[in-house]
Length: 309
Image (cartoon, rainbow, N blue to C red; front, side, top):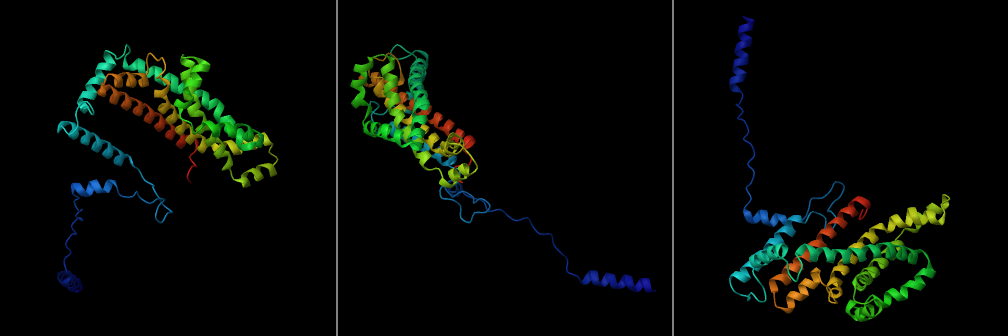
């Protein structure tokens, strides 16, 4: 009898209780194509521990790709619609076709690989010479007032001069061979690398130097373990700036008795109004310089991970 009453009570309570319906999964709002495009230009996510995020933080690869595609599209539209004559701006297809022709058959008695090899030999040869001379001199200028007094007037005097200004003097001294071309590019790279190394030394915190001396470090140990490591971000930045000056000076260097080279190819094509070769040479120079810049950015992340933190 008691079990029957208990069963009736449970049945009544179950019948009186409201039935629960399963919750439907949340519907994700669909974004239009325009909203997705605008999301590319939105600010990046804030890192843990930050309230608003540092200015300029976030990835920009998608923006760079979108900008490049937009520029290529405008280039194609301007040439296809006939807004610009092919003499002044050839179509992208014509430049690509000329690229393959120069790569296989050559232009001005040399293939594209030969032109590129000679230019890279001159630019990176001068860059290597500047690396082993400008960086030590810049560090020496930062730690020694005598070195600063010796080198600072010379660097600051010739640094604003364009390479074409002292090109005749370099030719008089060294002739028209490869030495004059490499020295001209070397001089353009030397100044920014030396000044960047000096600026890096000047940016070292004096507290770190005092702490090293208080623990018994010698002057050489302070320069090696404190000054050099603290100046490394500025040195890498100077290397990026210097290689850019090297590529801009390449055309001036290859104006003199050059038989091959990207700058020589561009100048030779401009004399005969072969605009597609001129644009192709500019694009090749830009791609090589950009790839080297990406390499320097990678080295910065590996060698100076504390930069900007």
